Length: 137
Image 1 (spheres, rainbow, N blue to C red):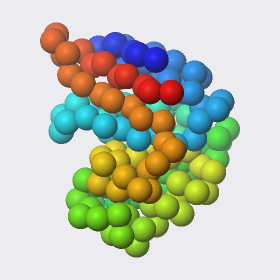
Image 2: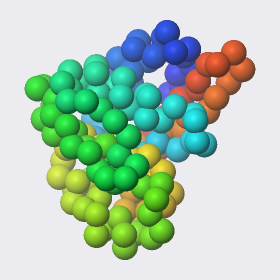
Image 3: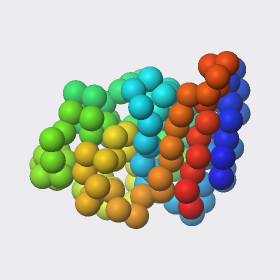
Image 4: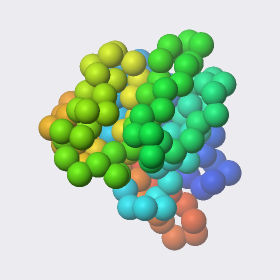
């Protein structure tokens, strides 16, 4: 699956992502360089999930927990600062992933053993300030 979108088209891309993937998948691993828009895309998906909490980057907290009235718990993880899978385990990443909740993981390469089985999502910047999200099912 591939989505190409501009900033103005972001809400529609998030809706397509949610309605296409959430029925069968719960854990999503977002890959992409700094500035590709991983957090921004996840914020838009959370908005589509009707999360009323303020959705922000969990760079320092590692895991942010939100609530969707329809889907329940939603975890947003940012593993950028971690140096090993052990640190991810200590932070509770594995527990969140195993909980059955919806999980969005940024920088999954920092703990590859823990994120096995997640849906790989690759974000890249295209010319004209567009983004391409490639999802490998």
